[in-house]
Length: 80
Image (cartoon, rainbow, N blue to C red; front, side, top):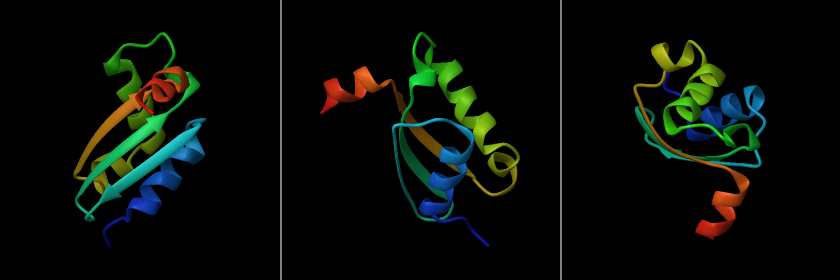
């Protein structure tokens, strides 16, 4: 069974402290906006690794494609 955007959001939120998570997708391909203080001082690849770690094996087994925008709270507030 393919995961829903709501499930992906729950997976991320339960394993990574987030201020905001928004996920859209069709079951195979997802786009996420993730705002977390954990991203502060981290490069883009390190931010993505935190999200992949939060998703764990689901990234290999259930989620085929995930594009993400990873922002700190300050960056998110600037994007409005």
